[in-house]
Length: 151
Image (cartoon, rainbow, N blue to C red; front, side, top):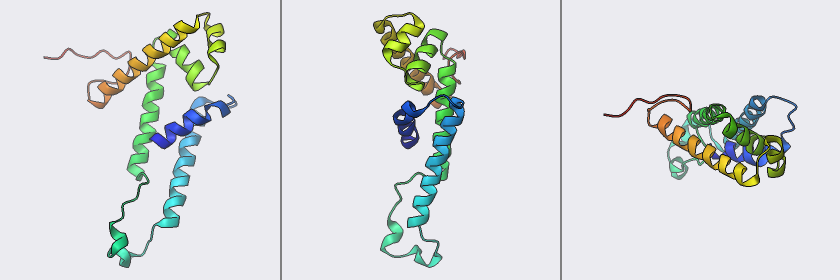
């Protein structure tokens, strides 16, 4: 998960908008999976006879396919979470974080001050974190979902 999100964050400046954001994110994930397969193919042995010995106990630091699938789902959930934010928070997150526009450009586009932009991004991150926590603990989906009161 951290590899994919790290690639998204570091590569967001290269996203030129020539394709849909979803396509770009999917391409990053696909390339990370291909890199993982190549790394494993170069280091993993397919010989069943090598299951014993000193090398058999060495654990791989690379994510397993099920972990990669979880990472992919987490990216989808974060994007759904951003899409479910109130418009003012969603616009601030999309322009500044996903589209990597400067704070000045975002403030001009939204007709807000820089302090207001920072407040909106802070609130958006809080809402996303809260929503992710609720989703991970089985208490709902994402923003916009009503959660039942506890006992």
